[in-house]
Every structure is written in C-alpha cells, then in structure tokens.
Image 1: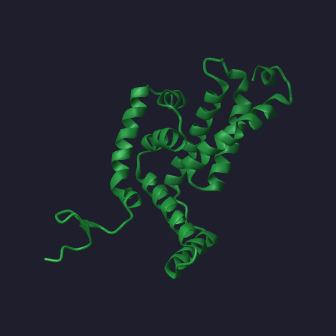
Image 2 (image 1 turned 180 degrees about the horizontal axis):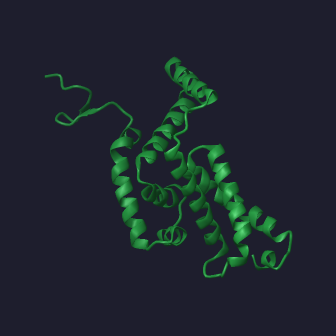
Length: 196
C-alpha cells in the first residue's frame, strides 16, 4: 500500500490480485447476485485506489479493504431498497426451469440446492442490514467475531448480539432446511400421523 501511495503503478494491482478472491466472497454473500456483487467490488476497488494515500496503517490492509467492500455493498443495498429491482427475463426463466426440474424428478439435487440458496437469500433480505452484515461475515464467510468487528467498525459484543438476533429471526424461516423429512408425531415418537 505504501508503494502504491509513493507512485508505484503496479503495487495496487498486486493488492487486487492478493485480496480479490476473499473480497469477492464478501461481496457475493452481501449482495446475493453476481452482477450486483461485481459492481460493488468494482466500486470498492475504485474507492480504495483513490483513498490509498489516506491509509494510515492503523489496521491491516486486508481489514481496510474489507471495510471498503462492506461499505460499498451497504451503499448499493440502500439504493436497492429505494429502487427495488424486478427480476430479469433470464432470472424468471431460471426459476421456472428449476421448478419444472424439481416437479419432474430430474435434477433434484441441483433444484433442491438452488431452492435452498434462494430461501437463505430471501430470509437474509428480511433482516436489518446490520444483522445481515454480521451474519454474512461470521457465519457464511467464517471470520472471527473480532475480525468482523474490526471490518464493521463496531465492538465485538455488538457483532455477537447482531449475530444472535439475526439467527433468532432466521430460524423460523429456515427451519425446513434443517429438518427436511416428514413431520414427526411428537406424542407417538413416529413420523406421520397418529393412527388413533
């Protein structure tokens, strides 16, 4: 980063190559759509490039870059709430074809995985943004709580409470993914209806 700030034209490209994969994982999990994630990541890299001379070294470069990506995603998500997107024709056709595959029995695993992903993304969309960001970093991307706290610029306890509240809100919406079998009859201990 210091080489970039001193005018080395190749230094920023090295940073991008070194951190792009991990930053992409953050963006795609936050945005849920590859095009939106790509745009957010591009915004973030542009912001980082422009702000490199202001990097003070208080945090690691990777933490600083993650914070910029999270902020870029946050900005895009706020704009999306103001202007909700409508599904494109291709996205609608994908959903319909997955539904057909699911009904016909062909491609069941792929259709089930796609449906589960859609359920998770839909449930995450219902969470407040601060809880969604904390859960994405900790539960989906595997960051430690203290790392997520540094990226989000909040206390570790705040990240823990946001994750706990977010998980509690997600549980009713996603319980079917955890226990996909037939409902159990609690009184008899057997699956299916009670014969009496």
